[in-house]
Length: 327
Ligand code: CP
Image: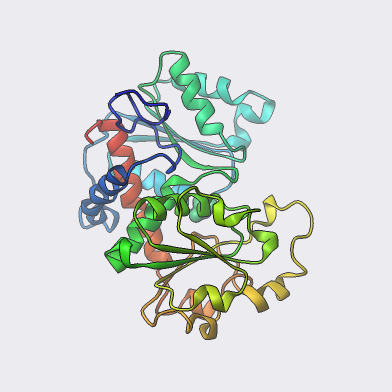
C-alpha cells in the first residue's frame, strides 16, 4: 500500500501525528481505545508504565502553552520517557538559529520524538519532511498546534471527552461556537467529528469570525452555519466553545468584547436552549465574560477540566503508539 499522507508509513500506520485530516475512522477509534486504560495512569491510580523507557521526547514550544505542554510532559514521564523542554526564549533560536538547524542539533542528541507548537502553519510538516529527506524518519513528530491549521491532540482529547459522556457519535448534534476563523482547534474538531460520523455539526458565530464559504470548509462534512446563537444551540447535545483568538486577528473584527458577550457569550439562559443533558466544552484558555460566563464554565454541565485530564491519557496513547509501532 502506498500513501501520500506524510504522517502514515507505507503500511498505513501512523508515524507522525500532524493533522486529523486524512486519518481514518479506524485510526481515530484505535487512539481513543488505546487511551482508555491510560486514564488510570492519568488519574494516578497507576503511577507509571514502561512503554517509552529509554526514549527521549523533546518539547519544542515556540508559542505559549499551559495545558498542552504540561500534559505532553506528564504523559511522556508516565510512559517512562526522558523529557527535555527546550526553553525557546533562552535557546539559540532567540539568536536566529533556524528551525531546521535547531531540529538537526537536537536530533544529534538522539531525540526519538519532537512535540512541536509553532505560530507558522505547517512547521511540524516541514520538520517531518526534513527528517524523512535526511534518512531520520525513525524520529517521530507530533503537532502540538501550528498556526491556524491544526491541533490534532486537542481534537482527539475532545473526541475522547464526547465519547466518554455521550457514547455514540452517530446520534449527536454538535455546536462549535465562536471564533472558528482563527481556530486550529475548530479545524481539528471538525475533521474528527466528521470522520467519526456525527450527523449534524453547527458552525455558530458572527460572519466576521467564520471562514468564507464556511459550510464548505471541510469537504463532505455535515456543516450548518448559524449566525444566531439561539439557533445554533437549540437541541444541541454538545456545545464546544472557542476562545476569541485576539493574537491572530488582523484589524477590528468585533465592535467590543462586551458586545460580543451580549450576542455570543454562553450564559445559563442561552445554554437552556440546548438539551438538558448537553455538555459544555472549551479547549482553554478561557476568556471568562467574553465567550463564556463563569456560571457556565464552572457549572454542572461543564466538562472543561475533565478534558484536561483526558488529555494526558490521549497524549500517552498517541506517543506510545508512535514510539511502539503497535497499531
Ligand atoms: N488548549 C490548549 O492548546 O491550551 P494551551 O494553549 O494552554 O496549551
